Image 1 (cartoon, rainbow, N blue to C red):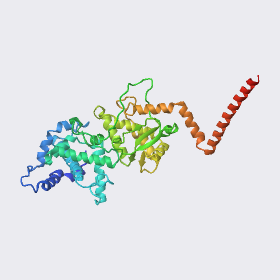
Image 2 (image 1 turned 120 degrees about the vertical axis):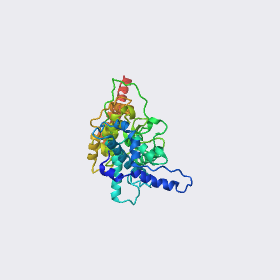
Image 3 (image 1 turned 90 degrees about the vertical axis):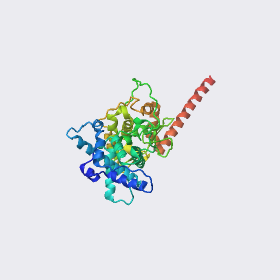
Length: 406
């Protein structure tokens, strides 16, 4: 839930959303002779309508707010909901600056920019600040002439802009046709954009060869696995950062670029928490991805390698700091990597492990690491190999000549 200061900015005696929507409605229907008008809406009308949703709303929280009366709880929902709608729907009506998340206009003051960034962080990224989406829909239905569908569309478009600007996802999910696909809250709305384009079919679990954990990037690189950054511009081939792909030869792991900023860890951890609490409803795709990337990039050398390959882009002070954040990302979670219903990357992990355990590949990798990095050692090794082959040929000819003379 939002703090009292934020609520007070939004409402005193009437909702800021109502004021904003009234302005939009006057502009939209001012020139229409027979335009329909909504009756005057007071705070009491909003409170009465939201009171019908009180029971369902309380059931959405682990804390049932027993210390709050019914009216207090409903007014809190109204204040929070109106603040969110006034910020998100209002911002959506302006031209967005692609360089600043949630900023309405390029000329906005730095204080407003900071506030806009804080709004996005607090209402989208934080699990503890979520209010049910049906509350926002009800307020939108009461406030705007286009009803709750207009609110859903505007907030969904805003969320898609947010995910695109952060380079987390590029395509909008289908949220309208199946009714159950309507998001539960704003964090869930972001989560709906993070679905891998293709998921490997579930294979029978082999208890003799279980999937344990991912190797680090440097370990995979040692046995010849190359890392390649996938561009979000691959239309039809990539939709979000979860679209990790192993090429047909098994020698190149293609990973969408993860652009890390100060809010990346907060968002990923809260998405993991969302899946941990609602696995049967929302799945475990984000958790599977976070387990993958946190284990592959768990050391400074791993982060350095992946940064050189373009898989990771960050603005942190050093690679060690990023590696520590990755190492801490999935602490305390419950996740079975061998369950194909949980781990959509299970088959990819098995193929890479098989390659890593291949003795011929390990010998070749050892030779490359030991000798072929130095050109003079490589030339010496080649000369020794040629000498060995010539010695064998000479020995064979000597033996054949000896038998012919007899």
